[in-house]
Length: 116
Image (cartoon, rainbow, N blue to C red; front, side, top):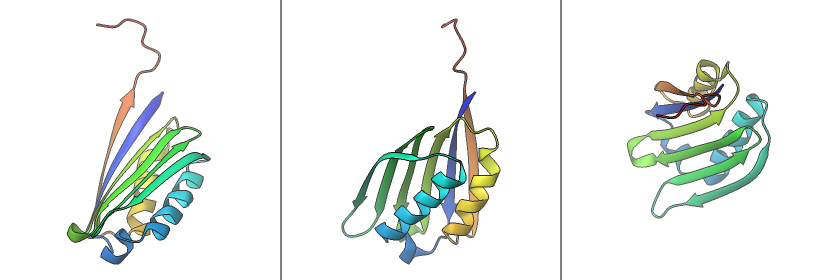
């Protein structure tokens, strides 16, 4: 069963949130943590501040969007890895030096054959 993890990170290191290379490094580390590989990636540094990182990974996709002015980062991960949610949320909280994190998971029922 596939699932999508949404992690909201609060009170993060504001300098890190505006550093495209550090965001990319965190993304690479987190993708490796879930046992996936990067197929293709796209990054953008906004002016005056903010970063978006998106990767197509071997299990689906991984994205990070930052708002340094709020100390906030939003991370989305779509993966088939069932142990993903809490383990990855904890690692993301640490990587971003976040004071708090809220993780939510949406399960997709890929085997359903009857459509309403």
